[in-house]
Amino acid sequence: METKMKIKENYKYAIAVPTSMGVRITPPDGQPVQSSNTFFMQATSAETNVASIASCLGLPVKVLTTFVKDSPIAAFIKANLRARGMEFEGKEVEQGGPWGYRHQFNIADSGYGLRGPRVLNDRAGEVGRTLNIKNFDTERIFGTEGVAVLHLSGLIAALSPETGDFCVALAKAAKKYGTVISFDLNYRESFWKGRKEELSKMFFEIASLADILVGNEEDFQLCFGISGPEAGGCGISAKMESFKDLINEAHKTFPNASAFATTLREVKSANCHLWGGILKAGGEWYEAVPREITVLDRIGGGDGFVGGLLYGAIKGWDWEKCLQFGWASGALATTFLTDYAQPADEEQIWSVWGGNARVKR
Image 1 (cartoon, rainbow, N blue to C red):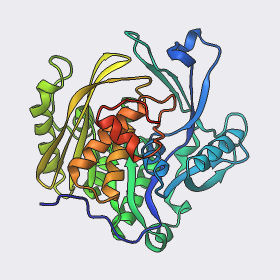
Image 2: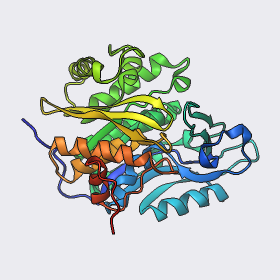
Image 3: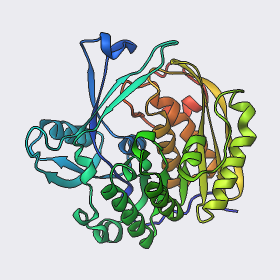
Image 4: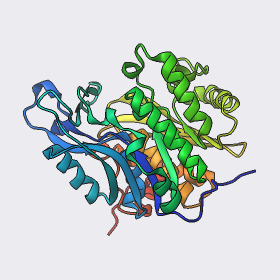
């Protein structure tokens, strides 16, 4: 029985993430977009949200992306990545005029009380859609320098046919050099519209190469047709066995993966959730029983969960500890105005797991 993830010993980067960077703007104090005239702007992507746990806790991170050349938004993004301790590389693409390339905008109302969050993604002309494997030296990145974990997201895989090929090629290069591959399915209906056959095949290829698969019940159902709990109805605690059945079916479909994880969330209000998680690894089940958490902004909680899980795996922790750290990292992320967690240290995350919100002097 494998009690922990086997990670290669020699590497320059703990985590590498291919991503399309953009900016997120949100009104302060949980206000709706349409009634606001002041906004907080941050650099963002789901994949760097995941890597933020490792980078804030001192592990080296590599971001594989692309930028609009001479763009002030690109400069803003680069400054943010540097501040977060993340190395980056990527092609500089000419804007090509006012109707050319740009970095995507994510416009979000984080919700408040019984008014749920609303998110608008403005991705027209997104430069990340041009990500291409020919612009990256995979022999150097995975062979010479070395990467412990390659984290892939279905958001990038589904962004365009080119990015799908890019993610498959990265997964194959990582596999060649013994890098652990993590794949968060991240199904988005708008990305899949009219492309179901194409994307199902490509997602299946990546998942077949993955060592760690993450997704919720909708992700597995909609990407691969794997049956899971019905939406709505009884609470998530009552559905635990159904979630386990879902993961067991996913394991049959992808027998080469070592670990399968899913977050569990029941929304009481925009600011009060039941938050949990389950993990199957080495033939054993591990549970973070759903507990009530107070939410400032829910966006990024799932990314925080994955980031904490991967951090624990890289550190060589046993699977139960990895799940607990992932649960707490996800809960921590929902307390930030940014859509990524910025932990001060491991102790802060473990205090979240322990339910200890007392002042630390």
